[in-house]
Amino acid sequence: MGLLDIASSRTISRGFDYYFNDYVKDVKQINDYEYEGYVKGSLNEPYFVHINIKHPKKSYCNCPFANGNRICKHMIALYFTVFEDEANEYEEWLNSSYDEYDEYDEYEYDDYSIENSFKEPLFFNQVLDNYLDSLSATQLKTTLKEILLKDKESTYFQYLKDYYKTYLGQDCSDLYFLDYLNNKIEEIISFHDYDYYDFSQKILTRKDKEKLIKLYNEKQNRSIIEQMILKPKLAVFDDYRHIVLSLKNQIEEKTLKNFSELLTSYFDTLKSYRIRNTIPKSNVLIILDMINNYSIHNQAESLLKNAKYIEYIEYLIKNSIDVHLLYENFIQVIQKNYFKNKEYIPDILLAFYVNDKNNQEKFKQYMIYKFLANGDSISLRYLMTCHDFYKIFDELESKMKNPYLLAKLYAGSHKIDKLWSLLNQDYNQNYLYEYVEELKDEYQDKLYEIFINHFYETLKEGKSREVYRKAVKDIKVIYKLNDGHQLVDGIIEDLKNSNYKKCVALFDEIKKAYEVI
Image (cartoon, rainbow, N blue to C red; front, top):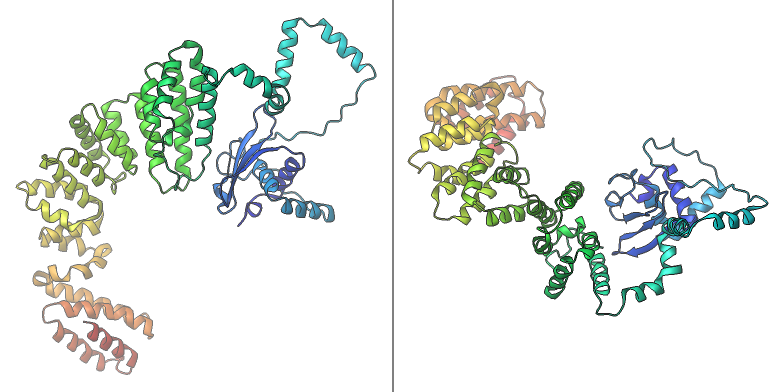
């Protein structure tokens, strides 16, 4: 489905108006199916819009209505600007028929400009001249600036473009250098494909960084440099952490706090995207850790919360001021929250072990949580060689709620009585089929009784090939019991002397099962 298919008719209409009134500026094609641009709204700053015609739901606008996931009129306006043929078709349709708009979008942020119906008074020019004469130089400057700021694009191209270069001075000037860096950064962060973009590329050269740090030490440059480099989208690059490390001790705490809030919001936005690449989010988390100076315990909690971002995990462990204390805190955290992100916990514990390969206790913890995560049989065999396996067993048993994993624990550690007690419960009997070999020596008769009863219960569901195939599952299992061949022969004889003696399809399915066995 395309962008127009998932937008409301009212949103399309409003978007067409924005397109028709030339509200869309600076359109760029990112690749074969992604475009971006700026669309005017009621605020001074235009909205940044990105559309993806291949995956429309990945389109983005920073207006309040879109809120990261809705299709808004600004996206439609950009779409019509890129695809003018469709805009022309829509205009023809508007002129040829009338269609009721969808009910007004309840949450849409209304920045739609109402048609100007102002009529110029007879003495407008005379009053304007008189008003200007009444203003002081300061008032004139303030008024003019307010007007020029309403449309920065027009102001720049009409009044400032030539003056801008003169103001910056020669190529070697500090202002020229900062403008050059800012343009370079803006170009770097113009990407949109998080899965295939190269985040290992250098944002700035070594000389650029050195000069930037030198200029930042001059107070008059600080606000403009902070405006230039404290951009959340830069945080996805590996190189950004070196820039932050160089400057963070000089940036005011309040400024860092505000930037941290922006980064947190940006990270939440990234999580809403379907990005397979873990590097962008890992790098944002690394920058958050760097500028917030989290405690060891906070870092341990973050390890579990963000366990899937392996680059972030490796960074925290490698750069911890006390990796042993971080490990101890992490163990405490997962002992209280061993169900949260449990599939990723083994990877974190393995990273701790790789950092300290002589510590067998860390390897043992890795094996414990690997078994807790998925019942890994290799992990259990290793744990059974430990001298304190009886303690490990108790720990595993106390943390396992899943009967499937509990059965693996009991079977793998040869706790046959516990295995039978678990699987003999009605809601767990389906697992019995997997553990016949382990249970048959001690529970042969009881197993036979369960399977043969289930076999005949299944047959009562009807005389069809589908029912017979389902029933034969129990015959296959009975065959695995001690003297299973004789048991199955006896069942066949009983069937030949029952109401099923003419059910050729049933005997045919049993024969097929024999051949498979």
